[in-house]
Image (cartoon, rainbow, N blue to C red; front, side, top):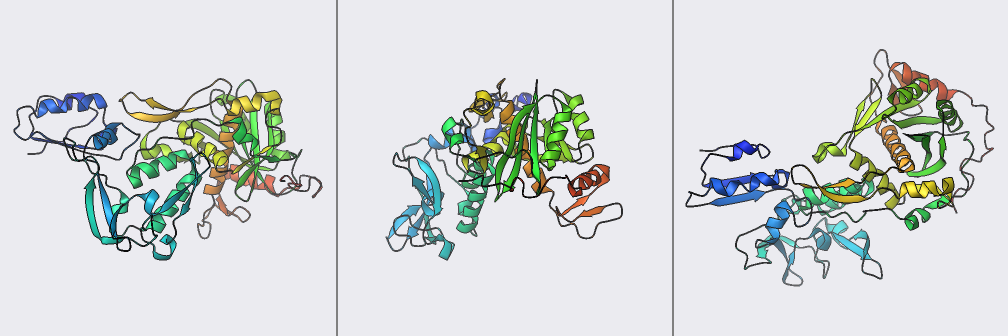
Length: 448
């Protein structure tokens, strides 16, 4: 007889006997409820408890159970070395690159993987024999068995595809790297990027001169609403968000002027706490203006942008949004102006460094990463909203075939225009702004 119970309903863990308990997605449990499970098996002769889960963070939940068990790992035979090698992504596929202090600063594909699409021996580079395998315990004296199972064990697992997934996750941000570790590698993940530093930002100070306006191309814009409007405007150059404007203005009219001067096509503005002001700007602007709402989410749903294309509202998880913007900085896809320490009389730097990524315990006793809140983080979130605007603009590029009745093809951006706001936007993008082409010289040698 089977009995299925909800892991997060305390009452379901009471008043039933059992011989075997199978705890699926162990790390998603309310941890206080797991402590009730042994009581259900007290009268049984067997008392079998089995747990399975994607791990989350080190030494918590299923990973804690794993390291206290036998720690069985899969090994494949290297027929050249005549030794079994552990099936470890960072030994058989990706090779860590370290600095003089031994800190991992990057990864490269191991020699032999691209030619064979096979897991290779870290010692000699020969393809491992997947048909010659065995489980090997690292903690043989443990009181119970534990096994590490990952997608590397799949019969048709492709090391090259796993490498591509890893590289894509690193480009997207910390949340995607965390998911790759947890869901693909079956490993816990501890974030190294807990805080930005002034040195990191100074290393990206590549913009010699931010122009007063642009005469060609289009920009994205992020606006954080507070006592001022904190603004970041960017132009995409070779997948790098290059700062065209970083500053603070006081009125909606000044915001509207910025959208015209910098030919803004997509803007994201903080929906709260000044919803009325945000909607006023959205209504008056001759470009796509999205109101951003942060929703506290967990799991895969937290790592997405949800768009309401009727009211132009974008919803996402705060941690995910900050992770994406931070990834641009860590991966050198964000260019700041020279002199970041003095920008906005030092406010910019303080704002960009205000938030930290920390490990917290949620209401269910689960370990989750969250970015701390701060009172002076307005420029940080202007940058975050600009990143979201970039993601929205890229995500709208679709091939939808011939436009249906009531839809207009946007040839320049490759999207379908729906509704009056999008048509109004096209009117703005096509009109002559009266500026002299070449006056600012485009980027005008912004990079060294």
